Image (cartoon, rainbow, N blue to C red; front, top):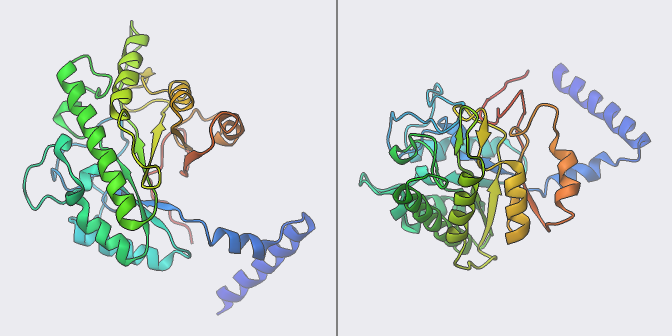
Length: 306
């Protein structure tokens, strides 16, 4: 009771202070209550997914897949999400990766994934009156073992990942149509070099051409919106990332795609708030990944306070 009183007094003081600056705290909280944040599913199991248990994650991600108490199957993950959402004010969304497909124990290639493999997720979201967003999974796979996917020199490997991207757009559209809420399908690839490459333009030309093939078929924007996401560097690609901020900024503007700005994907001296006004000069909308940038990408790190 004493703790509750202290919180209420502190909040009342904060309201008074903000009021002197012209901020109506109650109105701001009401407005915030109408904002739906897309909760990333991979926080529940440290990005492992349900494709290959025990497989190394890799792909420039600073995770191990060994989060204690993690969900071991889709049912446990949905139960954990139910608990989390019951404690978070407002009505939110779920952000799901392709590697969280449910295939009933069958081995299904990522380029062969279909909306049916996400039927239980769609049913769960509909039951909870939630929207969903989607992500192709361009890591933790034998065809991504050398750190390259859509920019790969091997045409066959590149084609595999192009097909995966096309499949994921179809899944995103099915999710949006099934829920009656637009799904954002966000594309991020880990492609890059650990050391300075001799050729910087070649991989970017291949990436742009691959994206063009993925986005060649028009999808109803009421059901699905495409987004592209940059990164400063990753583990194993410290010197050069194909999908840099400048690359995706140009691609998004030229092709009218959503540009995803991840707060944990930039240099410590950069802030995405300064980029927003520049980007919105040329694009109608942007996608924000709200994370806690500590040196670099830390959006999978759980922090606890009192």
